[in-house]
Length: 77
Length: 410
Image (tube, rainbow over all chains, first blue to last red; front, side, top):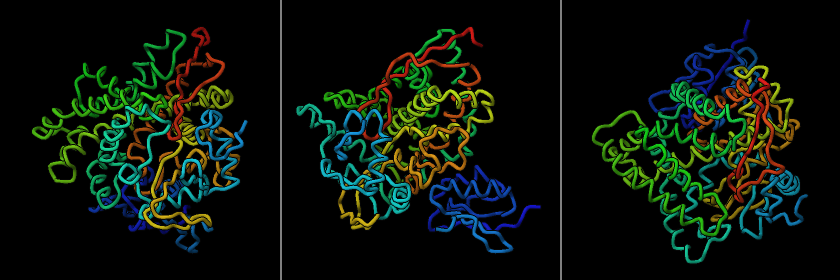
């Protein structure tokens, strides 16, 4: 069983490079302003979501464990 | 091996091996004022990423703001040509700040998204195969001139949707524009000839595409002119930007990556064992370990505190991805070439709003090339004692990469 995640995109940072759409197409989609939106936080695997977050060129993606609120990305520090 | 003068960015030792030099600088002073060249040199990973994510503090409009002459020096009688270079480069997308950058990038953005670029993979794969079909029986090649240089030009020609028979002319123009990154004192002459050549070549194409737009890159730029985002000059110089930015960088990725693979036979064997499966991560490691672009510039838009230093408004800044990519605080065992490295958050494509527009294409080209080479060639031998690099602080460009292979090994 995979755990539930909270995934969010900071629109003050997102410039619409669409890297996340390539890595986790089930989770992210572009809105009319060409910025990423989370359409389904369970649309891809945790590994794919974290890869999308890690590779976001503007560091706009935040990932937490829904149950505990534990932050998976960006890492603390 | 390392020069004692930490400010000598162009010392032959630094051009040959930037990694030892920048490691020393990063340890001693990650935000360093280089007195000789009058600029800040940023080498720490964290500092580089911070700088790139604060575009409001650091301007990309270098040509507009900087008055420093070309370096290495050029023939004094050629100096007036540098104004032409300034005008050409200054109008390109990479030199814009917000808000213009946001609008201009919005025009070309969709063309280059990873999803859109994926449709190019069959064309790229086929272009790689065609070139290697010709080369494989020869047993030797200069990777740079017969493979790494022609491949991206083929792809760019297709993206511009120009006739097949124009390809050689486009290649000549692309080769002239490479003088942007050379050290010869006479380099501004072939460079400006190439710049005029691309403008002359593209001008009728733009007229044509304004009339009957297609789905090619020039039509996309022309559409931006129609909607008032680009001037005609910007359309023309950004066509030139595609030709230049997609050419030299890809050449360097292929050559530097292959050289690293040749020098690390265990990693080459690893790639050979599963070319299709390893190509993606291997390409990322090639990009990190010996990046096509070593460094880029910014100019401080206001006074900024960084790493305990005060950077003054108007100061020039050079940030070194080749150093950040080897920062032990971001990459365990950073000097080890490990094609399975994951995660690999290198900054070879930059970060923030100026993040490389062609990233998905570059990755695809790298993946297809390294995969095909590993599938087809058992082993390469370096056919030279020593490799040499162009004397550029910006690009990590080999002058040539002669290799041989034994066809009987297969």
